[in-house]
Length: 524
Image (tube, rainbow, N blue to C red; front, side, top):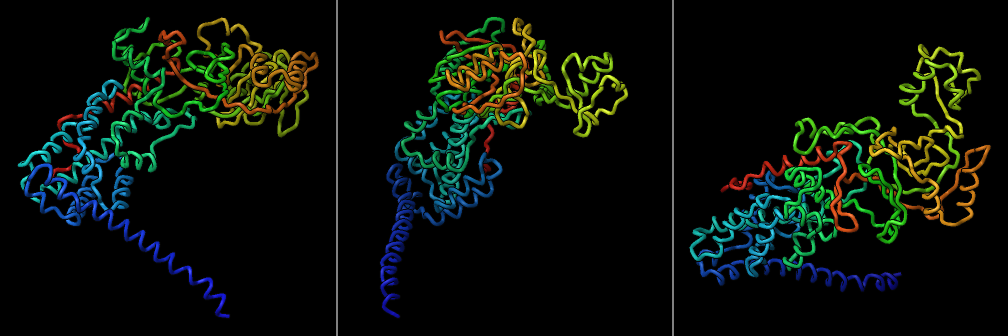
């Protein structure tokens, strides 16, 4: 009985010893690295104070500085967790002090205005002043000063580098926090991205890799730096528009699929994109906005416009996947439209419902003679309304379905006249298609499914038909008022929903509050 036991247990000792050795080696390596701080600083400056540095005493001071200055850190919990897990090692300070990367970092910070940012957001003056003390033989007078300034410089460097990275890679503003109807998957900084920043050692290569390299971004950036005036706008408003457009391009919410459907709300256009090129373009109608007369601009706006107060019919920004279509759809009329429009019209004309092919239901049962009801006094919550398939159906001959919390979709429409207007923010929130048949062909291709769609749309006796899309296709409903077209010419569309106004107000609040001469970390 003991023999099998001894066979199993014997290999455990070498494994345990190996793990112990690895842990001990790692710990000793960390300790050795931190112990080198005295030699590194003394060798560079010949300041006798540095010969007395003790890594354990420094760790105590660093912990105190971390705790006392956490309110001034952008990501205090994640930053502290990182340094606790790394035994309070001032890795950035030691690396940058040795290889001159403090200058490299500050050179990039000083050019932050090329991205519409303020270099003072990254505290270059404070970093430069502290770093210079360590390069001078007499800059640090006491051991306590060395410990505190080293800890403060490590934190300033870490915090500023994280902020710089986050602003360039993810944007200054989180769109989900400022927009009421924003439902796009948008990557934001997390513990992993912060760890990558703090572990970057070849700083120039790292800082080069995080610079936005989207061709659109570079064109708008060049226009911003050169003071380009966009036709129809003043120079001041052009600068503001380019500023917020670069910010939108920094948001990590862009399509990654080879093929996808893209709707741009302010442009009233839909494109089917395939391998980076538009293979289908059409006019669309979108939901009504709160700034359709373009009365409020980026030059003149109220402080209250910092808060997004959408028109009830605005089309939401979202991304999803088109999974199916319904040909000759039934329109389940939303309660808000039924109460505010359908019942109002039925009260004026008792035959309005019959003429519009609308059935009325109460408690799930169809009402045979809805024209006998006095709709001016009827209880609005008692009834449901459904419009049958046909030429007058508000959804037209086809609708394209994708999961979303706003209950919107892409659909055909019998109201074709709106497509001849410049202002096409006319719907209740869904996206009306100027060429629904073209979209069906672009998604289904020449297939049996498409042939069924084509035949059913032409039917004289329409009935609803649900057809799954074999190759599910991503759809992005976006909001972009400024971009460079295929020839490099900058295009502009009016801010129909006032979302530019909201974004600029939030960006301006941050940029205007930058105070270059006020230290952001606590003094000793």
